[in-house]
Length: 470
Picture 1 (cartoon, rainbow, N blue to C red):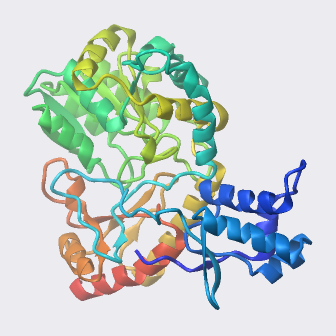
Picture 2 (cartoon, one colour):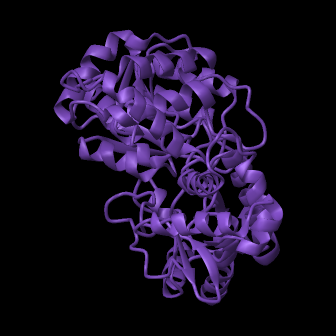
């Protein structure tokens, strides 16, 4: 994707740097301060730095000091200067393309050169993440004296996750926590531990396609139950479970992906009790539980209402997908069985990333406020823009999550995706999220996880593609 041109004013850079402390040389303080801002994601690749003259006036430093600081940034690969165009930030080696959220096998579109990806419902790394890696590296020597295998996860991280569940109203001990390589691994591992091949699994449709695919690959026979923009049909769930023949149910009560709906405590309790009453194993995907955008919802984890439920969580949406960490919170009676299955999949998650996640959970549990504010702003802008430019679409504004679930006035989702692809805009049709592999052509998921500039580039392409097929 082409680099979006940004200019960093001298006054703003001065505020981001703060005041110089200690005996550090002025040019070193300035160059190191800018480098840290780049490493922490606060100054982006391609950003134009203030001119030397502007920075001299703002910081009260000599021209020689600023020149030398900029020169040091260039020598370390964090800036480049072009005659007549000033000094521009660069990331050593350049920005690495890709890294978007992959959808189920056979569904993921390849992003064309210069294209815009509107399939990804995941945020970029939070500000300051690099500093957590630096601190985790300081802790790493305490672990490298041993073999490095922690099949259930680092004890310190399991304690942090357990304490977080307890804080949310679900008393949990660290012995109930198993750290995994993401929520998808957690769902697959839990399913293999509690389900026989060929067992029927109930899931709301639409649903997150990767979880459905992983269950199918284990041999599960998926049964769909509709969920609409008004949320989970608890009475319908109770009736479906009462009919019998269901081995497990995939539950997404927290800012459901893709509808964005949130289930209240009364609904969670009814759902959980129905699972227990009918002997059905509930697997609760809490990946989006902390993605509230307006105000923290007064809801408890669903397992509060039925101890036998298996809960799966993830760092991917709340912190960063690059951590590749998740966890299973299991009832004590199932921990052994789940851990036995886990040992056939892998022998544990990377130690360094677990140390990073431990610091994040303990110091800034949940989505950080700058990311939350950015997502809220993007959601509000995109929702309003769609209402203005595509008024025939019906789009509810969710209280959280990462995307809008758009109801089209005609079953043209597949055609819209194909048309948008011609303009290098990549979308996922509603059928991607269908549990029963068909239908939902009236629907389109539009994530707002991209920054405001990229959404602004994508919207006209989306509108033109719709006008062409509608």
